[in-house]
Image 1 (cartoon, rainbow, N blue to C red):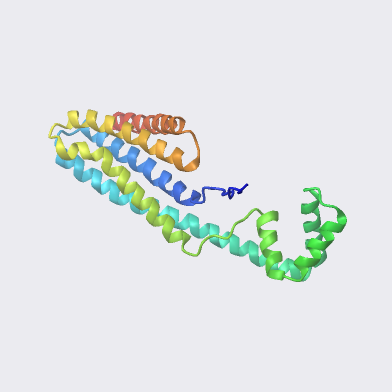
Image 2: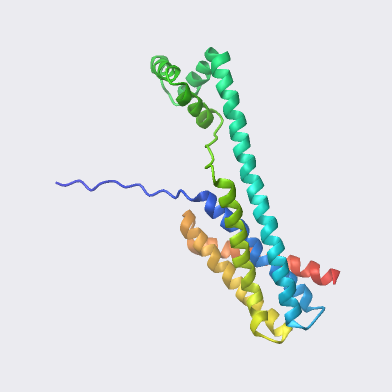
Length: 231
């Protein structure tokens, strides 16, 4: 009887999804809150649109820069810990070997089995360092281009998200009517965005969509209330 090959499907784009979530969620809520606050003070939609696009430009740059610096920080932290592990393997190999034994004993391996693994790692210093980085420190080596990818992804998602709540002001001359349409469109976009995010991350689509809609809606409502209160 022929055997069906077992193929495991794992989601491996977690960093990209995280960046999209960061950029899109802020892009949907912040420009909407700004436009809503301005609607209470002025009625010219072209001024609201101008201010909204200026905020999108500034916000996308700031968010992208933040993502770049965060990714660079992760890379620098990894390199620092990697250099420390390389020094320790040369300076105190017995202590590092004992850490390997302790790690494998936690998985139920016998002393003889641990000794075999330790002896093998001693012959391959680079693999030994990689092992310690992953299993002792829980660190994965970042991609070399991770910083720029993170910056561009967050900034791009922020721009896309920011255009959605402003789209109503582009087509409706009445600012107050545009605000109502913008609120509806933004909530729908949040729900769709949450559902898509759930589809990629394995979370139930309806639950993810509802959570994103509620959280984003509350954030937008809070920002709108503060903007109106200040204005």
